[in-house]
Amino acid sequence: MRIRPARPDDAAAISRLIVPLAEKYILHEFDAQAGERFRAAVSAEAIAGYMSAEFRYHVAEEGGGLVGVVATRGDGHLYHLFVAEAAQGRGLARRLWDVAREASRAAGHEGDFTVRSSRYAVGLYERFGFVRDGPDDEQDGIVSIPMRLRTATFERSE
Image (cartoon, rainbow, N blue to C red; front, side, top):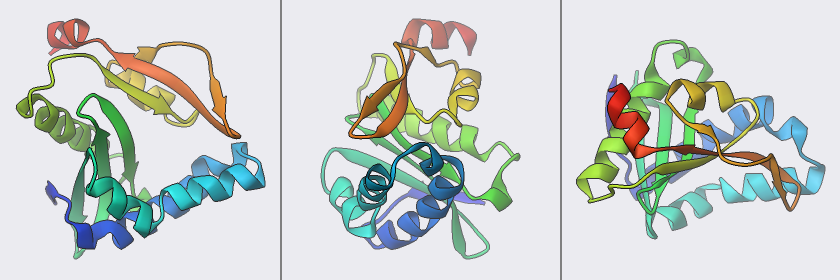
């Protein structure tokens, strides 16, 4: 398995990875309109736009295809973290997060990290050291849980 920085031509494959996982694990919590907004936000076009903005994407490849993706926005916010079902349970989410975190640090980020987690992923982020940072939130029908990884806490636990 190889983890590398994503390229703009990866946007369609990233979208194809995210959409079915979101449909299975996340979108059942949203109304139909919110689900469509989420799908539009992870379309190939949207992801390509994120890549040209302040987002940094890394992908994991195995067997000629993408099996994982991680993205940060502005170096301090974990924006996407998805792992194909066939690759789950092997520590890939942790490896992707470690790569993204180290890339943010290399770019000069010294502060805390945040994430707006789905209910499904809260336990994963807690294992990474994130803690809830407020009540569940809903914006335009999309539910998320704000979480924060405090840098001082994380560095003591490494």
